[in-house]
Length: 298
Image 1 (cartoon, one colour):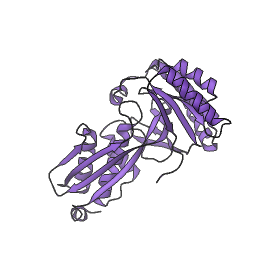
Image 2: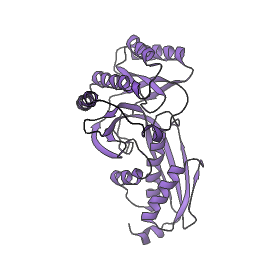
Image 3: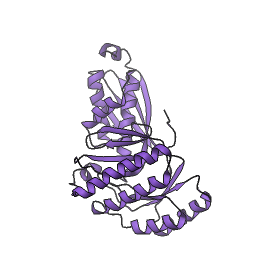
Image 4: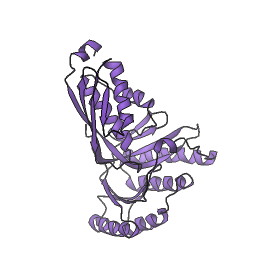
């Protein structure tokens, strides 16, 4: 759309959303020193509403969502120079826990601004805008993806998970993801090679719906991440997973959440779920219950 066409739509309102993630199924560094992750999409959402104005800059509610405001300003500068508007963000993704709340805010914002302007903003264009803001999870894509989060670039679309529940705990506090991603990752060549093998393994497993293998990869990634941001409850959560018959443990590598993966098709799922909830409640008063995003919601 031309700038003139955008200016004729100055009273429009755009609304959009983006999902969060329960940390990552896999995150590490490959032999070529590229940082990557594999997303774990969950059915929790950030919603953005953008009310386009002829001028006056961009305001945002809540006021601390300054990255989303910067993103809206960047998109307007390209597609509707001189325009402004009011951005409102809401959602059900806890902040600072490693559940991609910031990434979801930004993707929802980009889509809402584009909707208000009446322009098509492909996922690759969203990546380009986000690259100037912060390292970002691949939540602009509606399935599990391998994503180079520091470079903000899609590596591969891996597919949709079978129905899956994540039961876990929040170990408390918050983590600045941007600061975490500045930390050097001192993985030796052997570990980087292992990450490459794990990526190949989970790529195949997701393609065929093999949740047992997905869980094993997620557990190994959680173990490897202990040297960067250790989870003090990892051993206890591994024991709960074994007792309840989960397929593995998943962590927010740059956050505070850790959970057990429970496939819905497992025999005795309701009993396993109840047991996992009770055991997690014995560890923490911050028990988490999320469901994997199992369909292409768009």
